[in-house]
Image (cartoon, rainbow, N blue to C red; front, top):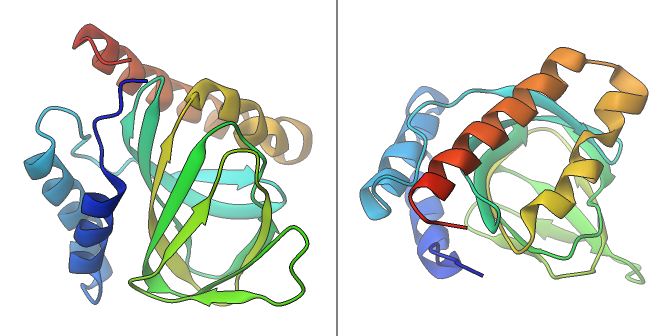
Length: 185
């Protein structure tokens, strides 16, 4: 499928970010990823509100292609919602705060703290809650365009924030075309 990123390496990078002040944390994430995968990581953190599955947070796309994405995701005030069900794998590397999750059929939550990894396998689904605040480095691999309807549905049907809809499409499209021009799917 053309994967270039390794979840274990991303986890190690995420652990290096734990404890950094926010003004250093986000630029450090982009810088460390760019050093490891030169030419495949966005240097700027273009923050965009994201409403998906009933949850509201912010995202900053750092890499996007047809087969992978890396982004920063979080909320400074908490949120909760539905993960979505995808044909992809999704890894969330917790770098600040706390996230509670439960998989379909589970009766007890799992609490994730900085350094932990939340994994959502292909066709799996979970509920999640950020009780106060949380920031994570998120990596997905698989057919990424199939995730866009879920990721943008709340924006179209609930918030009607067409500016964020356009910004999300623009940033994903711009980064994906940049990767296609390099021969990466």
